[in-house]
Image (cartoon, rainbow, N blue to C red):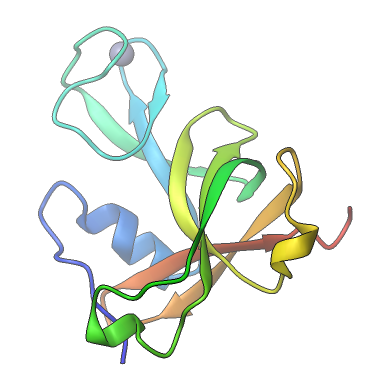
Length: 134
Ligand code: ZN
């Protein structure tokens, strides 16, 4: 069983893109800044002309934690799992599960690439794995 995120009008484009196996982040029409998670205003210039822009899905491991204790029945069979803070090559950072990597092999700066899991018809889940090219 997977927990399906609560989709709001603000976050729907992110989840829908992930369902289409594309990673998008918010892009400011005024200053060009990129940000994640989605917000009503640009964090750089406070502009409100925000859209979404597709990014590469490439990034590096900025920080991580290994979760050993499940706090929800949906994750009881998943522990231990890795919760990563990923810095995209385009700049924004996002929190995601890291998969296909042994905990012993985790090192800050590790090259990562986005992978996608289909949760529903409208929602995809963004996860990361070690980049195939590194
Ligand atoms: Zn801006």
